[in-house]
Every structure is written in structure tokens, then in C-alpha cells.
Image (cartoon, rainbow, N blue to C red; front, side, top):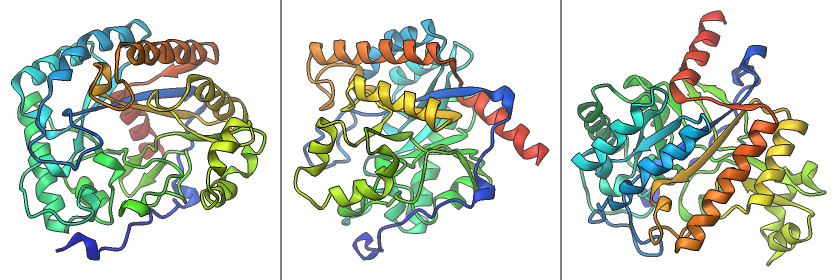
Length: 339
């Protein structure tokens, strides 16, 4: 089926009763997702030929830095990594900390079976039901072979969840879905629209949906949700709003999000909005200079680690504790059993 004929998917807002109310003893927690993937030129067309995973050699030292802060990593692994013996060995070393976990990340352009490219099919949710299922099976089976157990958490590359994704995941034993970027709208590129989704985790059928946390900061932050889309229709208005301290949209990632803005966002999320679970994310190729637009050289990498040092210090000061993927699933299971 030609994906160009598929209307962009608008993720519906969760019902109030589906939003997760974490118990008091959960406290306020944060989780770090790493999109563990191949390297490619972010400015070039996506290609099935891009399967190099050389940046994986930087993961062990990065993992050690997070372990020093008591942080487990949720490694969302795509197909080129899942079938590379050296990369698998590196990830087994990460898992040896006893708290980090492996999840699945579907990049449809490098995951068999392959078909003739269609507009919009870099978003897995735009594929036909059967093709999305087949690619998901290929990735799930590869991870099962590599690590001896089936992954329980999923992320679609480019946040490309679609109409069929949740049911496909549930049927394959997945428990956690993480493809939503709260408040973002990718319809301009044929992708999904998350405008109706906030930061709260919620039940998506039998799955736990954990959106990437996005926070409005600035003096107009209380009106961010309706105002920010309007600013997008005025040239340079969003940049002016951010620089003037009026309104800025901040996703919790070190990639293209300045640390001062991110620190402000966490303070708003924890102290004002009383969010109980913060979700952070970054791409594994950013751990080595030259593979992403976010870490182009050694100075960028230095800033990347300063970002994390300052962020983890703030989180500790606010008593926001890290949580691993397996522990999060256990907490979700306890809620399901008690409801």
C-alpha cells in the first residue's frame, strides 16, 4: 500500500481514567532512554545501506558515567545493532550492571523485509499493517536471538507510531511504548501528530505509554499549549519567544536543548507541574563526534557531558531518583494488579 495515501496519524488524547497515578512511594523518578542505532548522514536521504555501528565503541565509557550516578539505561536497539556481533557484546556488558535493559527501536529503512520506498515510510506507523508487523517481527526476533529474551519496550524511529502499532506490540508481548514526543506535530513531514498528548504516562490498551517529556518555560508558559502552535505561523516568532524569556518548548534531551533551558524545564515539571515521571532521551551515535548534528566535534561532546553532569546534579538535589525499565514495568504491573 502506498504510504503517501495514508492520512497522518493523530494520536488521541488518553482518557482521564487511563492516566497513570503513581503511588506515593514511587516518589518522583526519571528514566533515560538511549536510541541505540546505526550512524548515518542526518542531512541525506535515509538508506538501507547505512548499517555502520562504529559509534557503539563509545557506549561502555558512557554507560560507566551513568552508572556512577546510579542511572540505568534503557537501550532501544535497532536492527543494524541487533545483528552486529561486536555491538551485541558491548550491550551485554551494559546489561551486566543488573539494572539497564534492552528495548526495540524500529528504523523501517534498515529493517527487513524491504519494499520499494514510498513517501512517508520512514515512519513505521505509515506502513501497511502487514509490513509494519513483518518488520517488527524481524527486529523482535533479532533481539531475542542476541540477548536470550524478548524485548518488552518499543520505540518507533522518528517517533513513527501509527494506527496499528499498539495492537501489534501487545500481540507480541510488549509492555511499554515510548514513541510519543509530547506536544509535537510531525504532520509537515508525513509523520504523526502528538499535539493532544501531555507528559503523563498512561495506559495504551495493555501497554504503558511513556512520552518523551516536553515542558513549556518562560513567562507565558501557562499558555504554552495553545500559544506555541500559533507562533509557528509567524516567521521567527518561536525563536524570539525563547530568546526573550517569554515562551520556549523544551524536550528533555541534551541534543539541541541548551542546558539552562533544560534545567528550567525540569524545575517547572517537578516543582510546578508535579510530574512524577520524567523521560529523557538521546541517540547513541552522539557519544562519538561526527555522527549526529548535535555532537559534531570534541567540543560538542564536552558540552554533551557537561549537560548531563549539571542535569543529574539538579535531579539529585530535587530528590528525583533514577528508575530502570524493568523496575518501571514492575511498578506498572503492581498498579494493574491493584486496579
